[in-house]
Amino acid sequence: MDTEEQHDEPERDRSSASEEEAGGRSRFARPALYAGLVLGALLLTNAFVMQPFLIPSSSMDPTLRVGDRVLVNKLAYRFGDGPQRGDVIVFDGTDSFSTDADPDANAVTTALRKAGAATGLVPPAETDYVKRVIGVGGDLVRCCDRRGRIEVNGRPVSEDYLHPGDAPSTVPFETRVPEGRLWVMGDHRDKSSDSRDHLGDPGGGTVPVDRVIGRADWIGWPLGRIGSLPAGADGDDD
Image 1 (cartoon, rainbow, N blue to C red):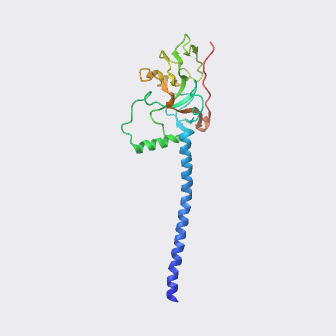
Image 2: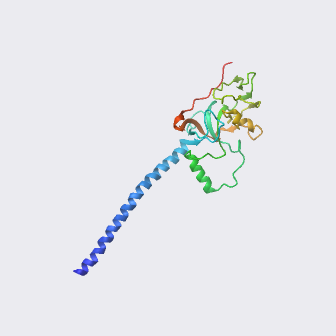
Image 3: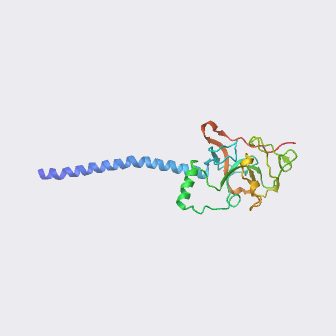
């Protein structure tokens, strides 16, 4: 009897230990699964619906300030009309505003940067820009009229969003926006590198519509600036 009892006891111990280990793994596995599901949902939302975007410069001040997190609506132009005059958009400036690739970039750092940018925690890629649409395909955009205002198709544009003290433009220009492209400018004209600075580049300073990531509709951070972005003026009746 003593021999049987000695053999039975270790069997019960091993069974009990296995159950405890399984229970421990289960306790850790369930939160990890939930975290994975939440992360997956966040990545899908960022990819197809809404993406935070950290404002890295003052080119859109006072509408957007350095450090603001805007929420970019990726569905804004998916079903229906494309970008409209006055919209604040985020776009990929590759081959229009930017032609230089990062020679030190690698797959790991690129993936980490994209993940950080997708949450609005780190600055976006250097090829991503936020500007306001001034002219769309077919528009004749020029500066300036006798009162110093930008004209679109012969109509002066009311730009209440301009940074105080800035002129609509200190650079004279006149351009016909090709179909499928956009003429964009920053609200802080004295601090913005925009379509005016790329007149001699491919596309004449305009941005392809298919490079638009989405429309900046809301400021999500900081708390004191949460709210929707007002639409820009289309034009004035002179």
